[in-house]
Image 1 (tube, protein in one colour):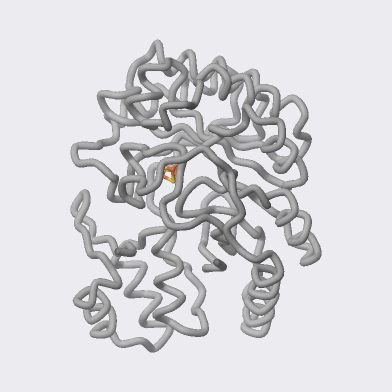
Image 2 (tube, rainbow, N blue to C red; image 1 turned 30 degrees about the vertical axis):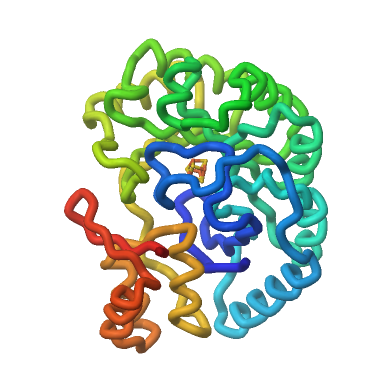
Amino acid sequence: MVFGPVPSRRLGMSLGINTIPYKNCSYSCVYCQLGPTRNIQIHRGYFYDLKELVEEVRKKLHSLSVRGVRVDYLTLVTDGEPTLDKGLGRTIEALKQFGIKIAVLTNGSLLGLGEVQKDLMSADLVSIKVDALSEDVWKSINRPHPNIDHINILLGILDFSKNFSACLLTETMLIESMNDDYAEIIKIAAFLQKLNPNHSYITLPLRPPAETGIKSPSSSFQKAVLDIFHDAHLPAELLNVPEGNNFPVGDQFEENVLSIVSVHPMREETLRKLANRSGYNWQGIERMVKTRKLHKKVYNQETYYSRY
Ligand code: SF4
């Protein structure tokens, strides 16, 4: 349930908390780095024991503090959609005892529900995905559960943004031949402007996507999107480079790596550096690939490791 910490471009050193069974999501995004959604659903449920989770976080924070590793955020980032957890609100409240800021990274698809908005209200940071404004583009990129209503999501996101007083981020993934259209980007920027976010991130499919043929648009288009966002007075940033290599050494190398890559596939260079610093032999990684614990994949001339 607890993994990392992971060096994050947006959150500093982020200790991940995964509270959803593998690949349960309301979307099946074409660019998802975790592969296709296994269980596409919109019904919220309880998936874990809160006491056990809090104890796991306590132990992890203790072992990190012994090693002098600081944690900037406890981040509910799952291998699915974190708002599917009906216990999200009580989890955020329980995690506050550690005195570390709490972040939730959501696709926003359930924000039409008052109970989801209420659960997220006590987070210190919420990041919401907005990849499209037009329904057909949204359907082609995010491939949502058939019973989700797009207008209801947008209204829910808008409503949430009006009442949420902590840090609000947005994320927009650019995909060639899907949302690389100026009219669509102008509509997205106009919508994001209404949310008054603290920061709007423009992201690219840098890690292996669920579907083949998913590519970033040209760098001139990426730059144009940044200009359009800035013209809309959005504090925007283009994230066009992979994450850093600064993963702290964990207690048990294999367990640590498997829990990280189940949410966050790692580049070979990053994994090699972590293995070196942990005193772990690379042959162990090759064994994990052979025994199908780790999945090795080449994308954009880079080798990545994810969970099977
Ligand atoms: S990218 Fe996020 S929202 Fe999209 S399918 Fe993957 S886990 Fe779900």
